[in-house]
Length: 277
Image (tube, rainbow, N blue to C red; front, side, top):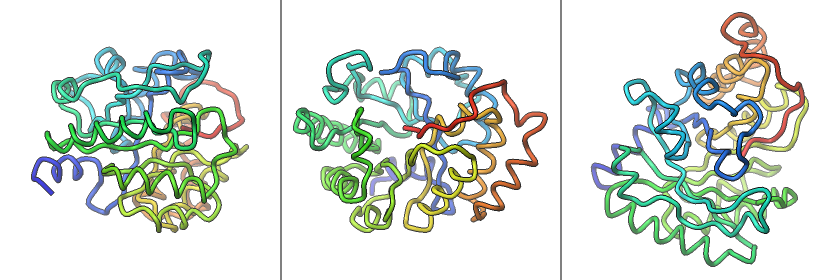
């Protein structure tokens, strides 16, 4: 691995081999998502506890202080929306030159295996990898499922993750699922977890994060499960304890409860949990 690539990977993945990525890129297809209407206000209290931020160039420039940030994973695919015909019909929206200009640590792209636009999304990944390898910038492939949430099963996610690795992705972001070790065993590059199933309590989030770590994930890329929580700082601290301190779900729950006052709170929100992207 070239020095530049190795250096950027080291920025993303901590010395313990684990990572906590915080995605706030949801607006690229959802618009002003609940609790992400003002990205700067959402991100600032959480930034100290994230290892990297997954973000679009527009929000990066408008909402992140260049003198006080964390490593950036730049979202470079898009072109579709929740009101459009098909979320899978994405293209590349940002050049590698722009990524270099923004001094990012990695770029991220969604792939849509099994859809009408499978070929296009996979060729987009391959093209991006070619450009990334040229400049020493790692590519994170996101195994997107669009609106078809029933695809979050081990057989499908293992297929997607392996294909992404075969095409040259340095990191794969995929959903947690039952039998998650089947996904990680078949993927020869690091795997980070996106959200799991829709759950109703923080403890259930801690349980699937802990399970995924036990079964081979190196970390998480969780957004809504953190910043849509009524206590987002408490939530990210608790999840960080699982990732970097090997806390159990019960221990993480205790951390969450102890942090629920003061800085742990950031306004009111719904109590239900939705799976993060």
